[in-house]
Image (cartoon, rainbow, N blue to C red):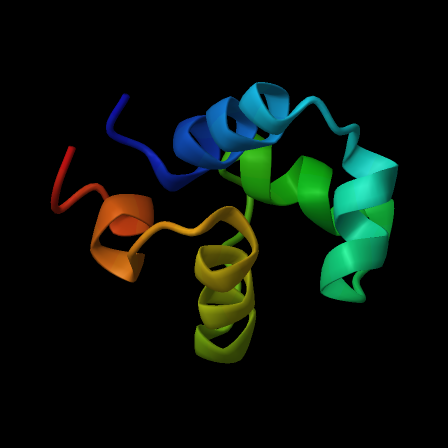
Length: 67
């Protein structure tokens, strides 16, 4: 699991939430979550921070720098 999108999807499923719920939590559209998970685009730094806080992980984990 090296890609950001893979890690995001793993965390989302582990928490038991759908893309729509995560999108609401992060104040983005559902399509944005899908694009992130598919590796079609990446979040801004501010959204990356929000994602890390929401899931209780580090930005390094999200970026694939740590397991």
